[in-house]
Amino acid sequence: MQKKFPLNPGEALGMMGGGQLGRMFAIEAAYMGYHVTVLEPGELPPAAEVSLHHIARPYLSEEGLDALAADTAAVSTEFENVPAQALDRLAQNVFVAPPGSAVAVAQDRNSEKHFIESVAHVPVAPHCRISAQSDIEAVEDSLFPAILKTARLGYDGKGQVLVDSRQDLTRAFESLHKVGCILEKRLKLFKEVSVIVARSVNGQTATFPVCENKHRNGILAVTVMPARVSEAISMQARRYATQIVDALHYVGVLCVEFFVLEDGSLVANEMAPRPHNSGHATIDACWSNQFEQQLRCMTGQPLADTTQHSPAVMLNLLGDIWFDGDKPKQPQWSAVLAIPGVKLHLYGKAQARHARKMGHVTCLGHTIEEALDRAKKVAKILN
Ligand code: ADP
Ligand code: MG
Image 1 (cartoon, rainbow, N blue to C red):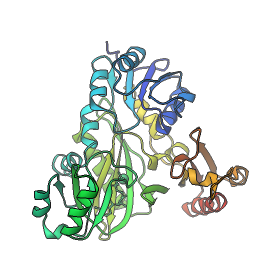
Image 2: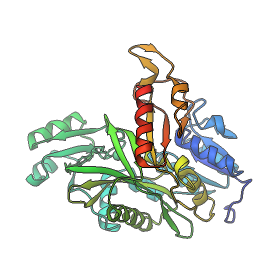
Image 3: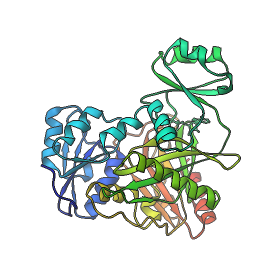
Image 4: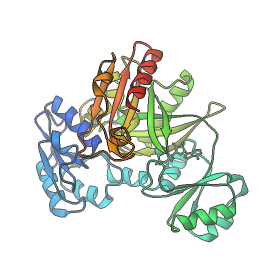
């Protein structure tokens, strides 16, 4: 039985997935007096430490899903590859936000690009579907140089190959085991930015200030908020992100990644149907944050004010900083915490591993220069 909106503090909320995004959600929910149940197969995942209940069952376990639905008044997800059948089963018994149909669009780069371009009317990079050798022969010359990406399950730059020619493309398609792919023209990027947008059950929308992102080895390394782009570009990015959630009839928080090209035009790259790594600075730098917004969406509450109160720079902390060569080491936290404006977030992961996201630091400042300067000091201490 679906409960009546708004779902008020005291209600139990469900989360599919128990990683850091689920953890930060659960912390926010606890602030506001809601209780969280996490479904995630792993033992003691980051979110379980701060949630009331943890159902340690596979994502497709009917018993686990039914227990989650019985225990909670609404369910959301913290990762985009949650199986569509799982969300559909939950939706029979409990309110699910975002809807499984929207999550499904974001799970496949071909359907995602098609949706963004043809339904939401937001520009994307020139591209085509590659699922067989005959598709390779039909590729227009103008698409090269290009990037071949697996249509499904790619993240942090994984499942992507740069290709300069048709011969390259044949080899790259083979190296990806001929799974369904998308070929995208390689654009010259001036900057990469992202927008965290929320849409409520009543269709109200709100965007956070635009984030400027720098990646290292395919993984987000630094986010500067607000992005150092013109007001016109920033407004356009926020408008485009809103067009996308409206077209999806979305309920929840969604992140849209954009490329800013050298002529100042914007191209949507991909979307994530959940809070996003690039939005973590909202926790310390804005009047509300992306996790509070996720909670407000799934409970039918009004959206929060997204005003930014402090310039911020977020640094991702990867497992590498816990190692000196092969030897384990403890990062110098006290030196980091001695810098003013520094907020440390660790995700409670038991083991540090190379390239594993272990936490982040947000550096606040009175000006963006001050925040950047503090971030430089933090990076110098930790690396
Ligand atoms: P992931 O899911 O791994 O984040 P993305 O599609 O965001 O996949 O690609 C990862 C990175 O590769 C982007 O952040 C960008 O730097 C680069 N990239 C992806 N597509 C293009 C493109 N069409 N042109 C130029 N660079 C691209
Ligand atoms: Mg990306």
